[in-house]
Image 1 (cartoon, rainbow, N blue to C red):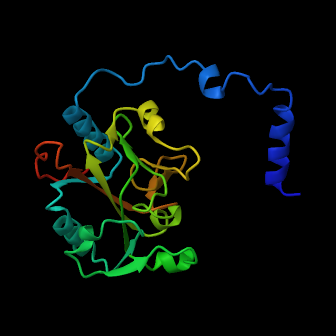
Image 2: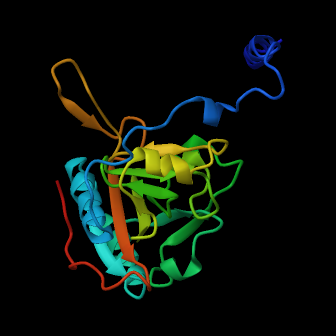
Image 3: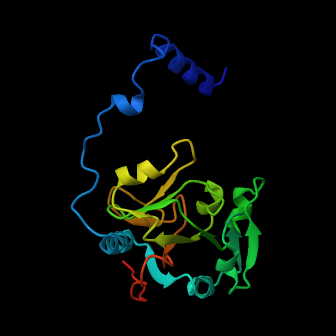
Length: 228
């Protein structure tokens, strides 16, 4: 018997005396807490996301849909990337301006193989402004979790304002808890007891977030790059 079977067996035994018509969990737990801190419009929410991403040492870029392919090509070129992992459902138009070798997201790819790839480009599921967090859920435009944990450079595209929420509770309402969720707040990093920061410990050393203004979302923000 595996550890998984043991845990699930304990859960089943614990629920054995719960009647079928018992109050569902999502209704039994009161959720009357505040869903966000303060009131802000869509534009201010996006600005807060950019500020907090930069605080976590992500590099933030802004563009519109028309400028996205050229921007991604420039980011890969500036990085000196010769190869890029491409999730199966990534918009093909995003990479039309670059000739960097594309590497497919394959189930059989090993960590050693992915470590030889220079960059990865993905979309996201949702972005949380108050925490500067990007959430991936393994959708076709994001691919398997491993492709965003092994390559050293991650370019993540966020559609604004549609994919941006103010708070974690609002993000949870949009996410499917049965999917493989990856919550990213800045590049991978850790600190020892003396607070010496080391980046690239369990994920990419460089996270570049591209905020793309949606066609119906109004004019794009100022064309600036923010760094911490």
